[in-house]
Length: 375
Image (cartoon, rainbow, N blue to C red):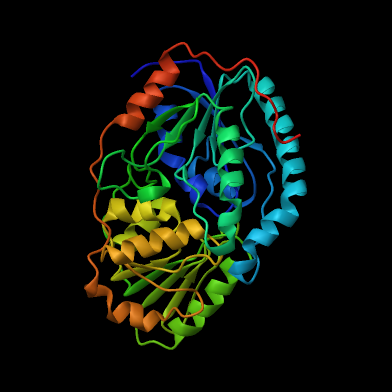
């Protein structure tokens, strides 16, 4: 172990909890190696990380939480119409982060999918599993613009950390492979699961189905309502975890138990003891389920091409069932669960540990000037 006085600011995106949960192993290693960690987040990610690291240093860093449309096909239009406001919020967040960096004299910023948070004179690291953004239908008309815009942002960072393994088989497929042609150093740091340091023995009592609700509104609530109605009609023991760390609800209604939130140890136990897990195919959730080697069925968030790709990939590989939010049937998913193998345990190594040890013990050379493309 190496002691260090380096201060690291960790900034997860606030579009669901996934970007915050996958920062857990990163934060754990930073703390283990003696870094001072400042967690800069907002809304549910901030609430979750405060619960997960109660002794941590926290700063509120507002972002821009996009409200997803009720109909997924409208997502590109929503992105385009909100683009000016998103750029303004990006500038505000970057200026706010600069004040946080100055306050704590931080030398490193780790941004999980917040493209705007590279800081001049500070060693800036970007975490993403989406090197190759997926587009469908008429969205493909904007593919070259999307790729160019994203690559411009990535070039403002010193390093890009990719939470997957470089070789095949891997979890993210074409989303993260192959590396792209940018100036920033690209490193495959392995799968990042918040359960890596937790005793994941099955919880008691075990449930036939554990439902993990997550993602941006209004789609999170639409999914919760749909699955609640179906769950109450089944003769099965079901747990629904709502993904709301700001609340403390825990109640039983018929055959269904509802939890607003649970800590990582509890969730790991619930998942380990479940006959089937139902969730969005968010990449952070997939990493957790792969670590626990669980059978699962997935419901992509309407309009999220990345989730649609991942769910279809796993179904084609006979690892997990998936269906659209409109057509998903809980009973069918449970009855056909044995047709799918479940997510495998991908080989783990110490790449993340070595990478974090390197940034904390070696002299880093941040970029002196980072042009603000959002202006």
